[in-house]
Image (cartoon, rainbow over the protein chains, first blue to last red):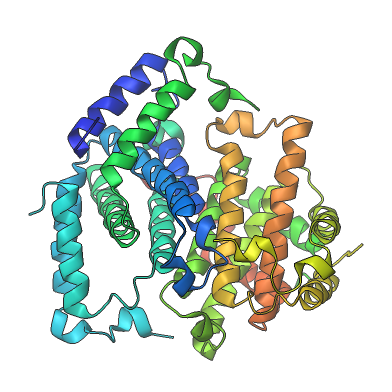
Length: 116
Length: 116
Length: 116
Length: 116
């Protein structure tokens, strides 16, 4: 059982190597698979209201959890193939977002979210 | 600087709370944002050959890194809102995939990858 | 000005031929571009409520119209490359959907739309 | 059998009205369904090489044709709900693209397609 991104990255490397799948794992293909999996998450929510989406049944949540897992697996794999440090990138982006949306200006009415 | 998923989850909670953005962060909306960001990764690769995608310039790689970060941030936030343990889900899915694609049968010619 | 799918198909063929772009227009690449453009439509709606999405400003609607156009252009081009008759396929699918969702059973509470 | 976009638009209006589905067909939801269907097209191509994508089997092509149909149906429905003239938008965008990518400058090496 992997408990962090680094371990997951190693496990996915081994997984691909054992199956000789690196030939299929070009960044282009992995980015495609990632987008396909993200859409599979979205499919679960497409006809729900926002309220319904906040109250999934246990069975539905288990299905969604598996789709979330697929996205993380491809994301970690893609980052590895591009030699990108995923945690550092996310941490850096969070800092950037904090500067872009100062709390006092963005509170509850950020242009980002409310522009029509 | 966050160095694991758990810390990222906490930081994103604080980030949203400080801006009163929980109202926008329904699972439906977060799943939508995730799919949009995944497509932004894909946009970088859409006209490249697979070979070109393996040899991005440093500048292009930095742009892609930021898109990967966006996907991870929304993924962690969505999992948090659904009360899903993302690392456990990914770890479990990897085990499931190992059973589904035994190395000796899937090697280099997995039906998954070669069916036309 | 093209007024039907057939004319659009011809115009897109000429457009690509004049630029020697057929080399880039593999079905794989066109399917990727189509998904990227579909996500650009979605981006306009991601933080809106359903109600807000029904009441776009004129300026926003013009932006969305251009994204819809992009999707149609790639869709027609992809169908052409695969030698698929798009109108016939859509017409056939509509018949299939009518059989799958009989009006009296699907009215206002189709399982398709309400399953959680 | 519908043979043009206008007829398809009318048929889809009737289809939704007979099932009382307009309540689900907010532009936000339709844009989501459109993106999900576009990803289902892409799924067929994700592990194929570009060459393989140019040579689909008849059975696979039939499956893809049905996904293309789904995209067109949601696209026409979304345009209708937003009161957008889809053919006029596509025709106008084609003109705009012609101005943006002059044939003599874009031939075979358009920056759009080759920037790394």
